[in-house]
Length: 289
Image (cartoon, rainbow, N blue to C red; front, side, top):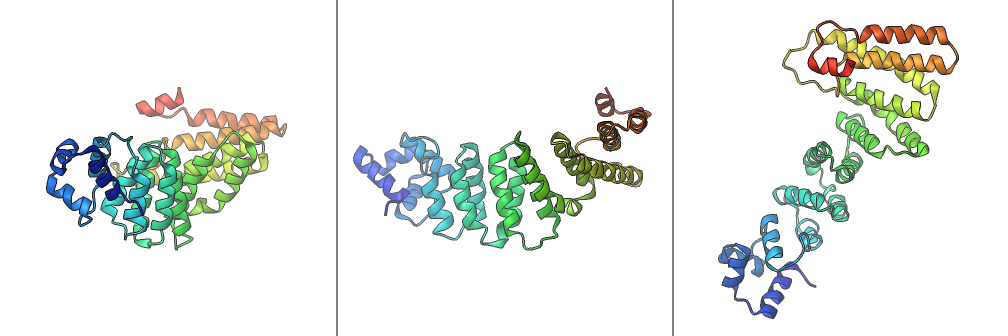
């Protein structure tokens, strides 16, 4: 069966290169290269990329083979797996990520690290790669009431949102049971996103229920805000007052669609009062504007 080492040996033989020559071309120590070819030393991602480039092949040419050799046929080591996942994601080799991760998640000890990589991918807008990891972590989570599982489900919900209303409805229904398991601040963004989905597909009973829930939770967080350390990192995407304001805007919209215009005006006026805050920060003012 062919492996990366045999490819390198065949290349040296066919091109007539001595090991010393090729080590200089690949910028790898000749002793290290010899050990890699003999199979007494595993190559790193950096060494693999250098060898691939020296052979004149496209980036990632050996990644599928490397994934099998290092993480499926051998016991995976996180020091090699992490850079491998990043490089596959960067080169959009998502089928390889899926293949390797499906095997690796059999070992529960990697779940924490895989979740952290998923969050890194998400923050870098590497959404398809992040989605693969979130689904694998969620499927491997032992504790069904864990905050990490809820956050995975929130990310999956966020990344699955499409322009097709029935897909959105399906994603929303699957996500709903996990909201209360999220961090209380993160819940505000989750409820806002959920209400937006239901608003877009005109499920006004759902919009109404979640809008009141958003107002209740946002008001509670505003009360708690004064007790928190001033240097505590904010977990919400926006300042807290915006969630109370948005809840009232949605409540007003629900009343308007039901023809209850007096109530719609009442909550619109409440919305307008909320955004007239004292001493707004620059961020607050930009949102208000």
